[in-house]
Length: 171
Image (cartoon, rainbow, N blue to C red):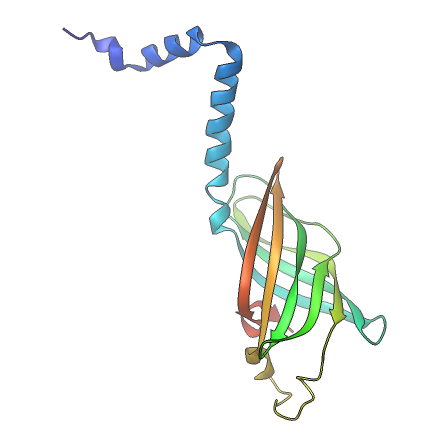
């Protein structure tokens, strides 16, 4: 005959007390880490707007940006790195990277400001005569980038591929 306490929470507590202290701490840490990582997939970069654009030379520029991010995780989320390329018709136009760290509030959609560098590689695709230099140009330009997020001691890298500039950039 089975007793009622075989499957109760009391049995679990007794079992944990019998384990050595390091194993208990390790089990608790594993549970917290796994529960905290589950919402990283839901992090989304909603919008990037350029508030200031300064050409520093013929092929480089610095931009002040405002990034809006949806952070469903329970902790502050830091965007510590972002680097990628601007492409048009399979040609790399420019490379960009984030020069500052942006911090976003937990469980909210928030906006933060930072500085981004841009290095122009090849502008011939824009001035070849086959492309209209109007608003439809943003449909043809695609962004591909890696973003590194950090919360607490955990780093996570997300990859974004071939996102139309019109969908992400607000000029």
